[in-house]
Image (cartoon, rainbow, N blue to C red):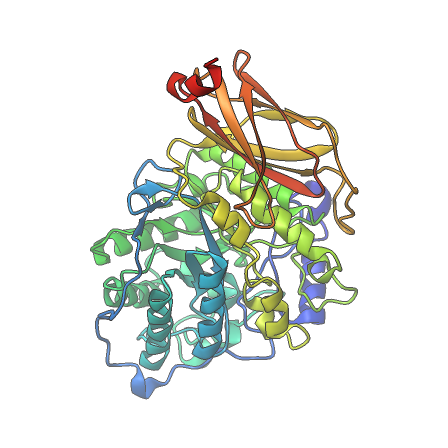
Amino acid sequence: MNPKTNTHFITILIVVAILSGVFSGCTPGQTTTPASPLPATVAPTQVNHSTATSISTLNPTSVPTPSITLKKGDFYFSIDGQQSFIFSRNVAGYETSQYYQLLDFTSKGGSKFVRVQLDSLGMGYSNTGEVDEAWAKKWEEVFEKAAANGIYVMPVFGVWCDWNDGNGYSTWKSNPLNEINGGPTKTAGDLFISDSPTQKLWLGWMKTLIERWQGQKNIIAWEIFSEINMTPGTTEPEAIDFVNSATVIIHNADSSQRPVTASLADFGDWSSFYRSDSIDFINIHPYPVSGKLDRTIITEVRSMLEKYSKPVLIGESGLSFETPDSNPPTLTTADQAEIGIKHAIWAVVVSGAMNGRALWWEDGVAIYFPALNMPFIQKYADAELPASNFVRDVDFSDFQPLTSTSDPGVWGAAVGNEEMVLGWYRDATCEPPDWNLQPILSNQTVTLTVPGAAINWKIDFFNTRTGTDIVSSATVTREGMKITITLPDLTDDIAFKLHAQSSAQLAPCLSP
């Protein structure tokens, strides 16, 4: 957290909770983070003890194609063996039917997996740690619907607000492991004390679910806990030990050895947490106070890659950490917010992150706010589709963020390798809160530092409204390690693909 905002962290946390009843996400130098998607006025579904005893192994009836995996040492997921950039969403709801509609949006929009916080249908365990059978079956219905849509799932087992016995948004009073509900603990922090009765029950519950769900082929990864640094009183060493213990259990229980992650709210300095060998990929949640989500994504992803040398996932994100029904209104519902979301989606493609979109309110959590609900979500139902079209079939093997400079009129970034570069640049003056656009930008140049020795490159410029339409093409030549590109006239933004050319490819152009 930025030192100048640290002093008012708790104050804002409490104010937002009082005004809104639910939190959003935390960012560098900001105050709060997204909570469980349940509004504070709605208690999580309680365990039905009469149905909490019959636990079976899930045998899926359908599985998505193609297969998606994360290979050790890679920085992107692989689709049928080829490293690829994929899009994801955070879906939420009170009932499975709401998830079904959001999964349909996900499929049509071009996203490949969804992140689901399991507590959004209730906490899923009894006060003695047994799995709630009715709850588990609801999630299995969601998993199967996702599989039928060709969508993968990343379950999130723990969420900070369920273990918040301090200030701000909290569902702790409804937690079955709370002593007031017949559970073993008076203090939520007991979850993170090694070998405590509470920790043993919770980890046992998680183990049972993994053993039960390991046969579900469309589970892409396991997230142990969301924003663990938001739980009051929890220290970094305790959190690392907790994640290490959970990871051992997961590896022993999951025959497919899926990757494992856990996430932090985007404040403070827990610099050792992501270095744990238990964390297979970084999981960040950018919600910049400035609303400059695209710039924040580029900066944070590249910082994380350099610091940890691990793949970076955008777990969730947004233009504002505050609830979308706040008064005064936040940037989430601003008149030109769709431009800011579009820019963030394109920026993440060229950031070095392994996924994109991953929005919080726009993906599904707005469903809990009557003033927004499904109509607001539908506005963004296919927001990532142009960018998804743009990266389709691109092999991201050995892609890395590239150093670049540009004329003052444009801002953006590029990623690539010795054979191919993807770039995206926008009107540099188009910033929140108004996202005003200049009528036209001409003669703007971008200079990239590109690896390898290829001299001649072909560049295709793409319309970002479709991700498939080529606006114009040109040939450019490397000078040393740098390639300078003159962008075509543009309004708003432009994307490009740069391909290294062999002598054979150039021959027709050089013939008399």
